[in-house]
Length: 376
Ligand SMILES: Cc1cc2nc3c(=O)[nH]c(=O)nc-3n(C[C@H](O)[C@H](O)[C@H](O)COP(=O)(O)OP(=O)(O)OC[C@H]3O[C@@H](n4cnc5c(N)ncnc54)[C@H](O)[C@@H]3O)c2cc1C
Ligand code: SF4
Ligand code: SF4
Ligand code: SF4
Image (cartoon, rainbow, N blue to C red; front, side):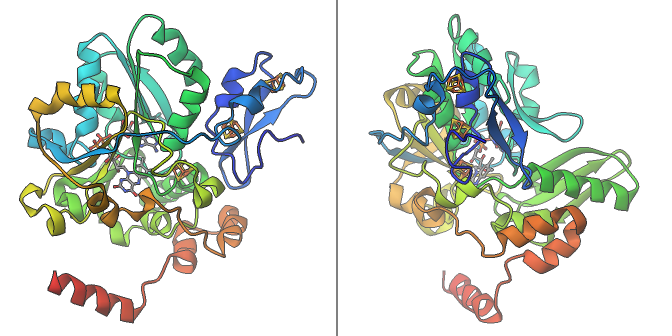
């Protein structure tokens, strides 16, 4: 099989599939549950466009402005309905008010996460909040290209997805992009297995999975599962899926050597949680959510200017954001047992996988953390 880029480096951004003039590239699921491009040799005319477009093979250093803010949406209900400070919703509403479309990640009825486009405010709700698995982009880039001819498009995704879109579209004044702080995306196969086991164990159908239920506090958020007949809220630290996510065991291979950290940003605006806010800007802390906002381009500045009246915000230093979010600069470490984990995934329950593969915090580390928090 001919590869466009080494499988371990491919982010699955779909730029190659979208650019191919012969429709020779499709995506197939690998053993780890992530999708990878496959070339149909009978259709390929060897034009090389896919290789010239791939953002991994054509990495370029982007100059970015790095204007940083700590901030949050003034409306506390909006923050409760978001992961962090609900900045995404403010920008999305600004684009929708200007007759644009917004493209973000939503679950379909089969708990499959994919990017879709909306053009009405009443359809915004399912796009909100972080979903901790890789979202399927399918052919959305081609649709975005069509829409850009006549209106503004806001695309939100992981940094590698934004890099893929930018590689496909090149420059377009109608395109606004937001990428998220990202230490990696877990396998959709793991999530589907987890959902199936939850449904079987509860003998009930899941209608919605909320990774960021901030009603227990933004910095002590829970996971909320809405079954057909009940709701179950679990502390994220006790939730099997979140334990595996935060152990980095089930991330895409490309996440362990990510090309899209600070210094190589393709988006206009980068958003994340402002972890550690109490140490740096305690006056900005609130229990519904606080965002770290990094503006990378002039367009990002313009958009920020247009939404800022609906924000509480303050200038801040980049180092203070990185302090609580080191993954902005460094990739997650690949656990030695990642291959063993995926070899066992098909035949072992998620509960047993968690017992075996979650990152255990040593007693000494727990004591050190406790002392640190008391000192702080
Ligand atoms: C996989 C993942 C890992 C993250 N890791 C970190 C981290 O380590 N540190 C940190 O501070 N922040 C991280 N974030 C970002 C953070 O959780 C919030 O998404 C961000 O702060 C925006 O919050 P908000 O309140 O402004 O918007 P929200 O209302 O929460 O909107 C979130 C936006 O992200 C999009 N989105 C959700 N899930 C996905 C997905 N899987 N793929 C692509 N787009 C998606 C939604 O469509 C929506 O547009 C991560 C997000 C994701 C999706
Ligand atoms: S070389 Fe050209 S035709 Fe072949 S897969 Fe790549 S883009 Fe498609
Ligand atoms: S363009 Fe994206 S999906 Fe295609 S090979 Fe490169 S990284 Fe992978
Ligand atoms: S860590 Fe890097 S490669 Fe992995 S999903 Fe995030 S941006 Fe993409």
